Length: 442
Image (tube, rainbow, N blue to C red; front, side):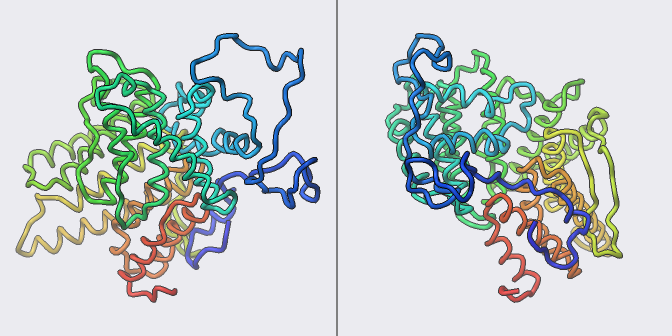
């Protein structure tokens, strides 16, 4: 991990980095691959033909049925092999967080990409974009793969049966990630692929049960929409009336409990960012759901361990370890929703002596929630998107912290997230520095 500003949690300096794995070659660093002009271990953009599978080898045996679009595997170009490996080793872990049993984006998508050129190009596009941001791939490659996807997607009529193809919906989810990598936490987003996701989701006949991949795509798309609704302070574009959505409190697995609070967080954003005044009864309903969700969730949602920050050593955030990705994702989104309800609480006294006291109590509770949000994300680094959600909280409420040590720790959440995962936080960093009265060069 890179050097951190003073005051950052000392115990986190020993946490192994969860950044993207280096793209390695089977050849030593000092050697070039036979028959290539490579001069280093990361010569990813250099096209080098791979070998044909020898005749008679069992490696080439599979079903003789060949789809209309042909078969992509085995891949023929070294860079594309590396892009697929990068997706399987790293990028897919951004997606399958509430899909423990299905793991659709980690396992199903690469299988479908064998015979889906659009999905294959989407995988190449998201991998190459992320690698190019961290300086390990041709910066123009992602645009080429992206354009290859759009050639197909743009030509689909609004009522075409292709709109119910799960492959194309999943490809659009991946392409949406390209947009997210280009959008700062405080900035403009054209949201083109976010709209495309809604078109694909709404094309499904509601009387037909959604497939596992379609449901997995919905939940990933919902998380993407929650993020962008926050960035743009607008209601969600995602419809929340699909038959597979469960708002109950009946016993269920951790994935289901995470999805339940995701829905409530989405509805909280709709309440807070609506263009029309919302009734107080809606606020009370959302708040009561959060409280009941907290009291009803299973024991697996308790932390594996909790360590309070050592303030004498400059620590700011608690260390809170949780059992799995779904729990972490549920926790961080529940905090975002809870803090939004505090910020938009219509029941606070408007005037009189109780007004100031109520505001002070709310401000302190918001700061407490943000500390727990950051501590959860930093303690569970394998759940990479939890850091993205923590950045939402820091951007939203960082200006409410006046202590310099706390400010440095909050800023470092943004810095570490961009350094480790190339998630764009620079604009948010500048925004907070100005809000705190820091020099923008500090």
